[in-house]
Length: 82
Image: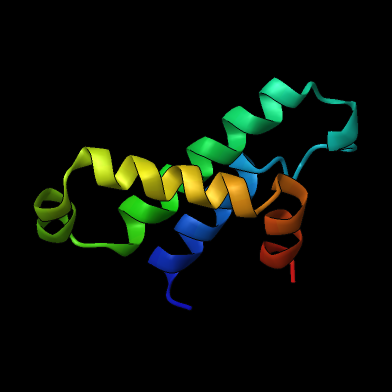
């Protein structure tokens, strides 16, 4: 990875609570909010501005919903910490 990629990776880890001692003690609402923020972040970081503009916010919102439906905060955090 280059340094720019490492910046993104560090921000994603932070969003998913990589520095939290125990995310199970957090409220479900907090975890869901972090997961949604993470989903938006990865989409914005991995698709071009032009592409996202062409598909529109409503469609991107469905992708965020999909990330949250088929993943968990702890599962994505485990992948990032590998």
